[in-house]
Image (cartoon, rainbow, N blue to C red; front, side, top):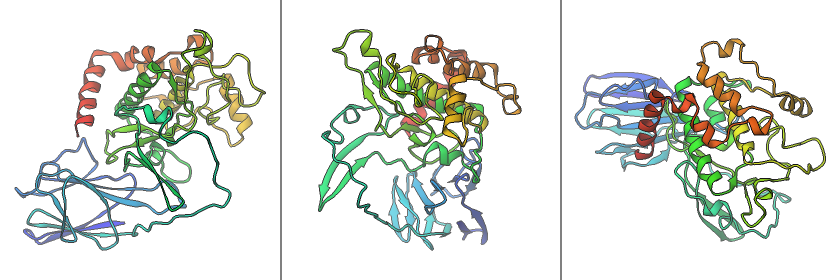
Length: 375
């Protein structure tokens, strides 16, 4: 996939390759802290940041989608039609025109809608989708269900549009290798997840299946992306009518072994001790570890071995991948991945760690967070 760029004023042309890790920013001024690839156009009709173009590929079995997002004052033309402050998916040979002088021709796969109905893929439940725990959630870092409609035997669920893919595809380099992000990127992503967990836990809701795949990038996957939590299929609201002790515990075996806390006993019969909302903090610790290193701390091709590693909870923070990571980040990960639940951080404890709450970090985080939500 590529863009053939032609500037009519200078009669110069060049080609920009599009890949899942190469978000392209087009604008009148440079801003290298936003995207690695820029196309700067000296044209008063072009906004400082005019548009973003990026590709998302969730796995090798599905074609990549190439998006364009217009955030300009004057709009962007796609095949002669104006796209004003919105998204669209590009198709092969689409012509993009920006300002008076710049044109870009997209070459790549065209998006084809495909619906596959599996004969045995349906499950009848008594719960109305969007009316339970998930439907009552409203937070800027949590995906929202807007409407559920049944038409001609098909169920359509309308949720927030997240065009940047998920964190796994954001980090994936192919061949099951993940590209670590910078510590500042990881810090801002974790901060947003903590804001969502703070909201959920304060309302007695536990996600129970946090992982890279369930954290979506809402807009363009720029260097500091806007992330939202998704997939609340395993989420649970704790019953406030129960006793104070039992209201804090759950007993269902759920989650993904690689991310699941040791107290979610995935190998033994149902435990009588249960677990608390701190299982989400354990999962966040695994996510943070992967963001910083590109390595999963407990993963094994064998699920049983993964569970044994989780139970042991041994962290290798002296390996090469951690050599350039700050002490504050290491302490944060350790605090999240304590096997003993009483010693593990909760959401408030995470927000009070030096990695988050250090004055220089917190002021930067709050500034970035406001900017992300205000886009």
